[in-house]
Length: 531
Image (tube, rainbow, N blue to C red):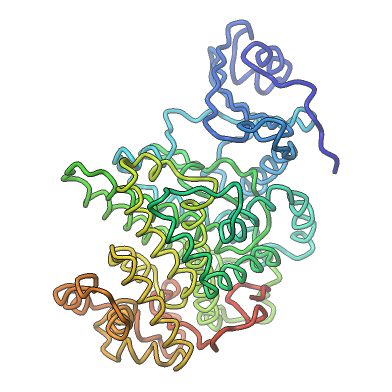
């Protein structure tokens, strides 16, 4: 399709007469257009966004120009992104309308989208920074992920219906190219768009760019993003693209929508929750509520994944039309219990890797996040960013080391504050995995089922690494605490699938055996995709 360049950029004066000619919008606003109030509310870098208030109601208007707003015509960008955002809202709205804004109008000539105006909603990122509590947040996000991803996958969609949508959204290639470049390529070499806290992070950035294993890991993820069309993604799902109240959650800004690996959306969302966790340590002023906020953030991470896994399994068990695992071949749904667990384990591993990639690009790439940007002085910000980067590097290089979402949050809790120790751990893990094989890692974790798998590997690898300071290793008390926090299902996989389990035992799955340095064609857990 050809791009349609708007004949004009609408503003506070021209929007009312334009909207008055759209019956559904005019009815929503009520009264005469001369009495409507228009206010620009866009705080993004790309589009123009307005809130329009009338006697009867409010609407939100978003218009895309053929360039990036903050750069002007020096950075051309397809205005057709508004069309793909509209289509993503429509497709996802078929399955999870309660978690999306209502679409009222789309104008392909003006590259303009009109939706309901959500009030008193606030941007989730802002609410979390203020310490607000959102008791239904994790449940709502899990609902959105299941509704948007499961129901656009081959498990729910017949191939004859899915293929045209894959072809349609492949037209959003200019937007997905931005993701391909900024997440998987640009930040790993010198590029004019990259920026970071300097000079504090200069050595860290240089180390990352020299880390061949890291660059191979991110290249594999890029192949997944380029070639896997598992489900229709939001494409940029973070805490700045979610609006919330205590009782409601809505997801917006789908202009990067494309078909891709399910773990991309899940991992990106978890990455921003983890960034928020680390950013809490930034302020130097004593804050008695800081630990409580951090605890809540990690609980959201755990609850989002747990709710997603349960919802995914429940959707799989319902009557469905998808061509993946057709019911005609499986009369007894219970026989697929093990396959569901394997499938979810693959999504989780993908999510861990994409989570790491997103964290890194938000610190040393172009698009930074407010949680970290707001930290002053620079030294305090850099300390938080270092912790983020240490965790992210390990997630990228060793996604299978995290067998459950609790392993992921435990890794965040234990992420060391000394760079040399963290890199020593990562290096030791890589060396043991390479020289002795995956079984050595399992052996290091030990057969004691009362020990967390990640914690055991962390302690064992650190003991074998040239750690510059024993102070950076987990303390004896911490190790004892980890041992006492028994989670036996995280270490020992079930010997067989049982119908008694109400949802996938994703927390109890042992990572599949994997040869060192797998090729990009190695099978992953996603339906119909190859790594």
